Length: 450
Image (tube, rainbow, N blue to C red; front, side, top):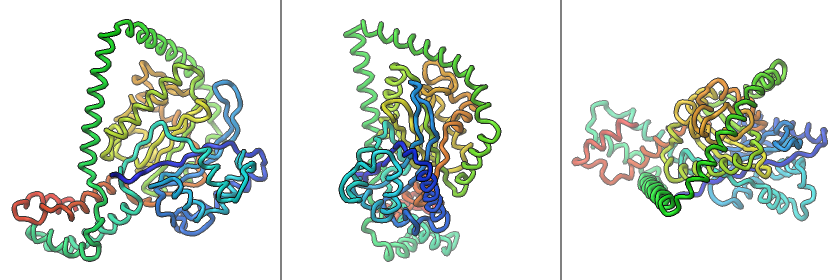
């Protein structure tokens, strides 16, 4: 069975006390300084000492206006991606950051009304405010923080040994020397925690079976109840009408929004993003958009996210999300009773290359998700247009991206591809075929991948 990987994500309105908000920002600055200085192994919240946390972030949103014209106050966004049980994860948060975490939550509306011991208050509040993702994608599926670290160290040992071998050495002998060098220090037990290829194949078969079964069921329903076609056609026309109205509003908004984001305000936002972007080989994106005030739009959004979640769980299990190979974690949350959409992502490379990957490989699915947000480039039938308009899509993404106050990664120098490659190399040490004369070619292939 695969190790469990989850996200703890909360979006909570902040208290209106200006002094407390200033103190909160100073607390976040101290936490982030420790992240840059020593990977947060010291300081107010010691993420670096937590054994279950892959990524973590704090952010403060700007005031906004909902689709019903009601004001939305500044909010705290706190999100982690972690291994295992939620209670054990919260235990780590309390153990390595209790006082600071208590202060952060005390700046949120509703926390002061929690009664009981501080640890119980924190646990109860986080669980009550937790937002479960409508869609959740994991790039390095099944690899815990501990396994990623262990496999990196093993692969460093493998590569060190391989560099010392003669270049023309027989593959069988080379594999034997590497295995004898690495195995005594590592031990065979627990090197590869799961049979990931078999698990991926099983999920792929389940996906194909589910899609085929769904298609057959749809054909049967249309055959048995042909009147279903009429409401479906009506929904398509309703969608196209709303898309045309949305396109007119976007045309009217684009000029005004570009002006609103010009000058000093745009410069300050870019300075804030620059503090966090390209400091490591990885980057993050946290964005909140306002969902269009339409029953059809909200229903379609949840339907699309359910489809994305299904595909992510059963189809995208090999480190690729619709052809994008750089995403560690990504999740979408419909928050505030359907008023806004939160997107949280951790990825490799630059912001521009990340958005370009979506434009090239996944413009349709991305448009199907964000086309329900106010200001998104116009679409046709959900998946056409939209993100294909690269410049306007990037402007939309940047406009709604939140500058983080804290961002932590447990392995900032590792890409998804490197994590996957390390797993494959370590798996080779447990492959009973390698090192045998009749599997010379397989052994040679494994050596070439080092």
